[in-house]
Image (tube, rainbow, N blue to C red):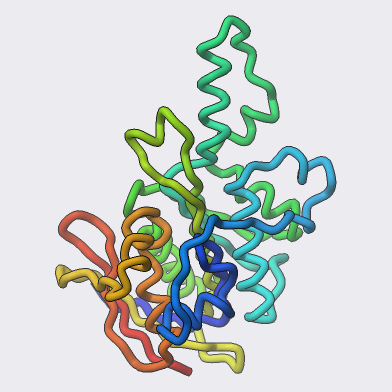
Length: 265
């Protein structure tokens, strides 16, 4: 596979004990201790009141991380292509629909139904931000972050335009939690550009690899990396946070991983 090259201009991060990229950068770089805490998602103020009441947590998570990434990159969404990737949709909405179907009243509300589709976050995002560019929506189970990163990098390389990667996962309640134990929410967004700009914080070169995956020495961060599929991207953010050139290997498929050469800008 030929290396794919892009420049990261903006980063958004939200997860357990990681309340944004500014704080997360200090934790991932080891300059601040990691303290696991329940993820708190800010209200989706960009959405009109009606949509704000109807949307689920996966939508709120996507809006929180993407708006942070776009703000730090200094770009607007109107003409920004997007790649959304998640290992599943809205876990709580899925749970509620299953409860409805198992009850005597099996009528699923239209709101529940349209929130159940996998591109719900993309649709709400376009409403909230006025985005009119193309949007790809992917799902690859535990490999979803890697699949999304590759898709976004290919778009940047082929089209020669910016692209935003919006990766995120939400938790499941019981009984699905017993077989899919995702206990919290985590999202990562990256604004990628084809050329160096004043906003660029890092240059990345991506290719496939069979090398060993990078792991965190910190037990709490390593547990987080393994417990939520979107958190497979945290070693990349760690390399950026440290601010030094690095070779990072990320989880992807069982025998194929993603190698990233990171250089600070």
